[in-house]
Image 1 (cartoon, rainbow, N blue to C red):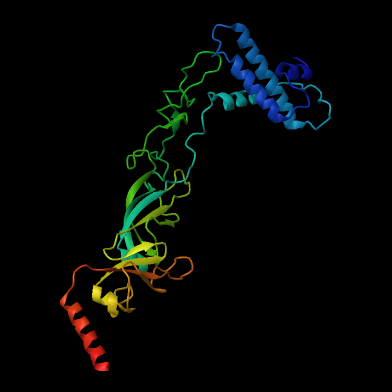
Image 2: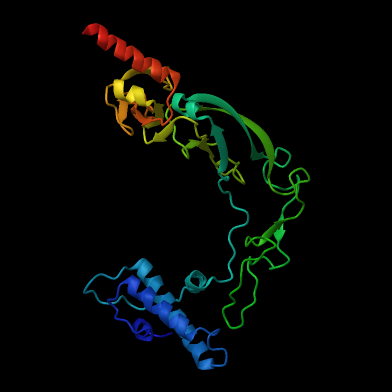
Length: 343
C-alpha cells in the first residue's frame, strides 16, 4: 500500500490542502480518467482506480484526524476504507446504490380556486368549499400491501434501483422506471388502493375570507392537503382567491375609483348629487365651475386593509356629459329665478 504522502502526490495537492481542495482535485481527475471517457485506454482505467484509492484514503484519514494549518500529515492509515470510496464514487457519478425502499414522505399540496364577487371581497365572507383529497387507505394501513405481504427485489433492476446501461468499470444508469429507483416492489398490492397506500375522499372545509382580500391572494390551510405516504406529514390546501370585476367600482391598492357623469348645468352651477358607495349612498356637493376630470374623495370609504383594518378612500372622477336633459333646464331656470328674486 502506498505511503500517505504518495496519495497526496497522486492527487497533485499539498498535505496542507483543505478538504474542499481535495474534493475539487479528485473530481477533476476522476472525470479526466473515467473509463467511460477512455474505453480503449487501460492506463486511464488504472489511473482512475489509483485516484479513487488516494481520495478515499485521504478522506478517511481526514474524517478521523482533521488537518490543521502548518501541521504535518498524520501517519499512514493501516487500511483503506473501500466503503468510503464506493460511497463517494456514487455521490459524484450517480453510482449503483439505490435509495431506501419506500421511505415516508410528506403529502402533496392542493390548490383550490375560489371566485367571489367584488363587494364580497370588500366586506369579507365565510364560505364552505368542497375538494377531493388523499386519505390513508384503511385496508392496508397506508402501506400499499395486502396483509401478510412483503417487499421483494425489483426484477427489472435486480434491486439496484438503476438500470445498468453504461460500459466501463463504473456502471452509471438512470433510475429504474419499474420501482422508481427504490430497488423494491410490493409483492401483493392492496386491492382497495392498488398499492398506492391512499385513496381519494370528498372533503368539506369552511374558510373565512377577510375583508379587503385582493385578487390573486392565497390562503394557506395547514394539514388539509394530501396525506403523506408511509405515515409522512400531510400537505396543505392553498386557496387562491379570484375577485370578479365590478361594473361601477375599480380597485387600485386600497382605494376605490368610480367615474361619475354630470351634466353641463351641474358643472357650471354646482349641485348636490348622490354617489353610490359599498357602504351606502353618500351626498357629494359639487362646487360651481366643476371641471371635467376633476376628482373628489370620501375618506375611509375604500377597501379595508387585511393587515391593519385601515380603509382607503373612495375617489370620484366626474365627467361632463355632452347631452343636456330636462333636469338641466329646470336647474338653470331655478337658478335664474332665484337670482332675479334676490335683486
